[in-house]
Structure formats: C-alpha cells, structure tokens
Length: 79
Image (cartoon, rainbow, N blue to C red; front, side, top):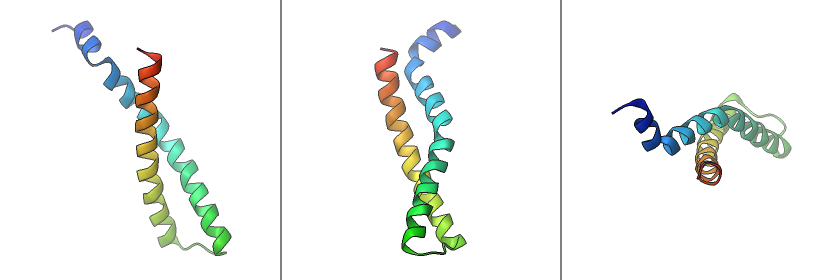
C-alpha cells in the first residue's frame, strides 16, 4: 500500500483530526473566559477551584464543539 492510497482512504478523518486540533485550544480559552466572566457577574470573586472546574467544563464543551464543526466543515468542503 503506497502513501497515495492511504491518503485517499483516510482523507476525511485526517482533516477532521487536524482541524479539531487547530481549533481546540483557542475555542477552549474563549469558552473558559466566557464562563469566568459569567461567574464574576453573579459573584465578584471567583476562586481558583472554581476556575479549574470551569476550565474542565470548557474543555469538554470545546472538544465536542470542535469535533462537530470539523466533521461538518470537512463534509461540506472536501466532498
């Protein structure tokens, strides 16, 4: 099996993974900032433990969001 047939067989999953990885970190940071600002509106001081919990929530949310967006984008653009 040469590299060209491998690329053709796994074209979509490779690009989905690349796009998800590229989007994950900036999207996670943006969602985390929005979570922290929302929490600061209700209470003035946000503790470090609360920030860690919000970071975990932002990680999960951004991972799901990036996977779905990447899947839809690759499906529309490359096919």
